Image (cartoon, rainbow, N blue to C red; front, side, top):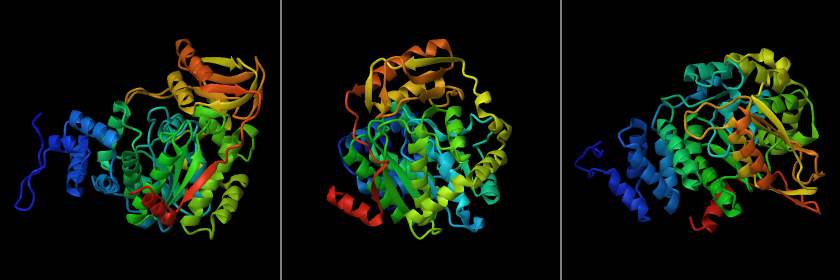
Length: 464
């Protein structure tokens, strides 16, 4: 394929992709025009995938400057059509997580925020690396459609208050190409690329407000606290500069969130909470969901503080209004809500085994990235873009961090596509967990919060 180049004019010389790869490889900063060239070339297909992959690796190694990250975010946002939420007649707000294991807060916070009077247009993603994908989990519900047109998207939100969908081919097409390439080329963990990927989709939805859930700990893409703080500050400052009120919460991913990690089993755990149940093993999921929903309701203008938003969300959780909205959303997008009557009966894994504790003591550490790969290897995730996932695969973790266990006590139940896919996840779990004679110190669900002001201070302190 011949080298693509920008059409020459009297003001600008032509741009060649090979030059941009070399410049980024050598650590030099690209201009807004050059960044836009890359985003538009990804969207149109005019830049070969091998050149995009080479540039992504150069960007991963050298990093993107603050100006490059912001330019890439805007260029990707503008690479396709955008959603106009003006017809909804409500303030619009969304939440995005940087990715985790067992992270199913979207199923709770979307109906929670909608029950509190705001509209939630949520454009979500699929499994990436060791983390699960919101869309894959929702598609474990028979008939549920994530690929809606923008008109259908708007109609569902008008009817139910919330909708969770995939990118349409015309919405942020540059991200669709680069997202898939990052997953296959080992270039996921780059703050600038993560920022642009997340925010381009969110900004294309025309949001009034956005809450970012930035994971820290052993299961996060940014496992180093300083890196996570920089990413949070970068995204808040970038989104605010684009006119969207934004806050970022640094949240713990030092263990799977809740008891379930997989696809359908995560829906089951979320349904239990929306029914007003309060199982001890799901308490961290419940608390984080209420905190996130509280901030969403607050920054969207429906509550005077995040604390008031939390109280409103908890009321919606306990009185059944969030469950009503969630069920209506699923039905409006073609999902079979009859299976919600007996969700356990629908679960039909190909093979099941119980892993008993192999040591006694307190669970002190979990390598959550390894646990995420264990979930993926059961068939719940994918190794290549476009691969199908098993809706019934996944892992239930019976012992959480801080729990005391005895040898022979059930530690995890694994559900896999077939018997052959059980052995590797078992070994990954055994190598990921550490025990001690003393309990670990408790870890708060949220360690830090970045608003516009604190984000700008953080970026200045880091030299950006």
